[in-house]
Image 1 (cartoon, rainbow, N blue to C red):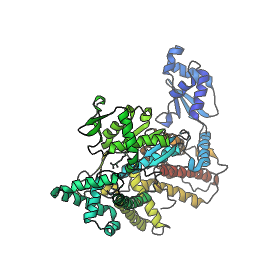
Image 2 (cartoon, rainbow, N blue to C red; image 1 turned 30 degrees about the vertical axis):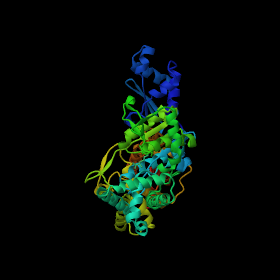
Image 3 (cartoon, rainbow, N blue to C red; image 1 turned 90 degrees about the vertical axis):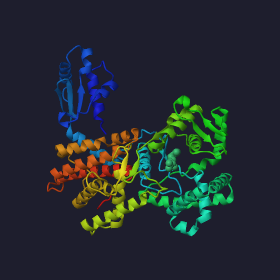
Image 4 (cartoon, rainbow, N blue to C red; image 1 turned 135 degrees about the vertical axis):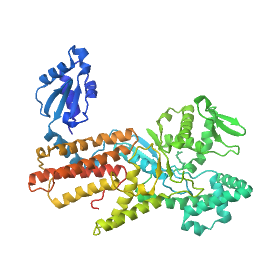
Length: 566
Ligand code: ARG
């Protein structure tokens, strides 16, 4: 692929030997409006060295460069040198690259095979998988795909919330009021009912709290009955979670959750004591973080049991030893900002210089119109219900608009679920938002279905044409303004992917596929594809092909399918 910017830097370097090629390269700009040129070079900085007015410098440089094959024109506008690239060469370079790379177009090798851990979803077992979980799940999975695509070896971890005193309560409740077969028929809602009942009963009879502590202690000591019950809670919960992950097409490399670290905790605590970080406080152990401007962190309780933060410290150390990560990324809501700052500080205080490679990627909260979600109050929207409703609604739309569509069920799933995921990844992740059924099930405008429909339209054009178009393309025929705009956007895709990885922001890719779909629809509106002139038709089909491929690649990164027909 020709790197036009690099070529320009080389051409300019020959004229400006006082500046290094890197510096020249970094000064080259892309004008906001392509009418002004494809690339521009401002000459202001050269004035000091050349002791001439910038306008004059621009003129002198352009005169001595002369004509260049890669550029249609090199002009001046004030102190700027504008480069207008040779459209035919540009079209050929971009289109041939997309065709050659296919599903890998946009990928790169900048990761060099280094290991990046992406921890996401990390749901709590025996609790609902609710709409709030879509955030970590969709953002994390997209980041995992994106990092893999740019050459990192990624490890997707679901750090399940499967440990802690609440499981003592859950065990007491199951033993007292539970019926296994009822729970198995509808695990999470039934476990939730029992959990709520526990809290109601414990208000009347505080002894229950002691019993719960007792059962959690037994669990920590590997008591057979406690472990079996806990394992069963975990199994039935995972059955439900996996149904949702399957719907979303998400896979994890590891489900090592909080319980996984229970036997690794004593060693870590010992290490912290040796490093003199732990301070006794009323029978508990704490790390004093006041000098670092943070509240004190409680590491072990009076009865010796560990906490959420203790398990995160153990997990980070384990991951470094086990995976030797380059980056260890946590996609977790911004309510936990302090928690992450605290334990990352502790890792640093333990003397681990790799602490800086642990990165918390926060996102804003989802609330309901009735207020924040509360599982105890039963104020919760199940993610599975949202996905199912989206699929139902899509089925209705298909029955009205395209009743003879093949594979209706499959397409309805791809479009319905795709719409939800796409919407989730459309906005900057840090924004809070209020969940609304109406907005969630509104597929108009800049939505996933719009982009998917553009992909299906491109597929249909290619099918209808039934022509070979991949060789001997006359790229001169793609010089219209709308075609060039489209090619410019296609050319940006590899950089867009890298940019989204650097910012940990999948919405950069989502916005990109919207822009691409819009540019394509504009082109298609102004320039029919299936024209009589076969040479022209073939050139336009090649462009359609590259748009279809790039939309597909972009959607795949954010976890959205690209149906051929819809
Ligand atoms: N299970 C936790 C929750 O639902 C999130 C876990 C986040 N990850 C972590 N390593 N602390 O709030």
